[in-house]
Structure formats: C-alpha cells, structure tokens
Length: 348
Image 1 (cartoon, rainbow, N blue to C red):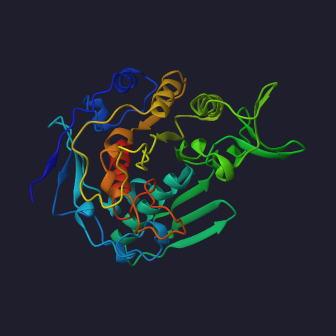
Image 2: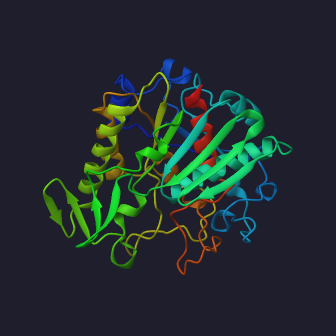
C-alpha cells in the first residue's frame, strides 16, 4: 500500500520560533530542518514494536488488545518534507546509551502519560532482557533501567500551576507553581498542558481561578492557560541552567471529539485526514510564551501533524471507563511513538 498524506503545514509562528535563539538546537535544526513539517507515509515496517510485548500499557491505550480490528493506524511514519532532513529511525539501545546516567521526566496530563508510556514500551521492547524497576508514589511514576542508569519519570500535573484547597473552595492559582520541587532537579524535562483547561461542570477540578489580587469564578480558558504558562516560563528562566538541563514542551495534542453537527469524530476512522487543518489557539499562545523566554526551550511541535491523525485515537477500543468514545488520547503503539522519534531527533 502506497497511500501518502500530504500537507504544507507551514506556520508563521513556528518559523519565528525556529529563528529565535531561545529554541534548543539539535543536529537537524542546525541544518535548517523543520522536522515538524512533512507527510504521513504508509510504511509496512511500522509499528516500531508489538504492543503485546509491552506488559504495562495502560488498559485505556491498548487498542489492539481491546479488540480494534483495523491495523493501518500502526503503519504510518512521519516523513519531513525537506529531503535533507531524514528523521532517524528510533533505536532503543542507542537512546538508552544517549541518556546514560540521566533522569528524564514528563510533567503534565494524560497526554504526557501517553508519551511516557509509549517511550517506556519502545525501550523495554528494545532491551527485553534488561532489568527494569517500575514504581509509583502519589502522582510520580518512575521507570528505571538500572543497567543503563536511566530513569524515565512521569509526574501528573495537568495545569503545571497549583490547585489549592482554601476556605473558598478549590482554587486554581495561576501564579503559583509549588510542584517544581519534584521536577526541578532532572536532566531532561518535557512539559505538557492544555487538555484539562477546557473541562467544565463536574469535570472541572476548581471552583475559583486566582492570580495576584484577582479572583474570578471563570475566565477565557486560553487567557488562563497563557497566564499559567507565563508563571511556568518565569520559573524556567529563573531556575534552569541550560548547561545541565534540557527543557522541552510538548505541543498541544489535538482532540478529535465531534465539534458541531457537521464535524466528524474519531469513531470508525481508519486513515489520516487528507486536508490541512487550522491553527490551534492554545498552540499559538504556547508559541508566543516560548518566544519571549530567556532560557532555551525546544517546542516538540506535535500539534499540526497529530491533527491529521484522526485515526489514531482509542475511540470505542479504549475501554477506560468512558461511556463516550475516546477521541483525545492515543493508541499505543501508535502516534505517540512518532512523538518519541521526534524527541529522539531533537536530543541528538
């Protein structure tokens, strides 16, 4: 099968960021490569691993085990448009050697969990006989390969800033970021946030939003997200030493839940979208914040390329306790593996 999805994916803000000296360089970036502009190409050699060989995939993400009958969603690789910018195929042993004596942490929501679980599977399958230790304390999960002295951690903090129980109720403090004590000493930090900012009703985990002397019942969610990102950015600028720590931000992972009567959701979708999609306002806000930072942060810009992968969600094969189809998270194996291939290229 030679089906190819094409898109220009050119975005002015991404170009501005690539020219800004705040963006961490990689070997491909030094060649002038934008590895986030390209095409989804069907490739029979994919997926990179068999999910049945990874015993710790969260049930909600294990679409194949949950009975998904089609497998084409596993067969797409990302191919950058520029022929000079070949994305190196992921090699788990090389990745572990690259990270020797390092601690890498994902900080964010369940989309960050998606990428962390994907990476642990990619590495476990690459070194199936290597001893690993998996442990969890509260919101912090730690997956360690002692032989390589590599720790891969995930800390769940959907907003990066704090939610505090106060007399007035649960308060989302946009200018407070106390959990930095957990992730502040890592060698590589990969952040993510946006998915939970849109929740309302019973899923909304706060009663009030506060910053400075201002306290409101609600506000524009992109505005609130931007204020929180600036709090995070100020912490990075004040506390991170780029000679010791590399910082990444996972772009906004798209949600393909139905938006209006004429829109499609992810149910029964088996191929990527053919057409370009519009910019995500949260991604624009993120790009603007990153462009103004003093310390280097690499934007792992998975937003536009993932928007095309309407076929990559668990849909009705997530079985994670949801009554509605899951069009937010991603199957493992699947799209998050490609995010990790992009991360691997950025770390070179």
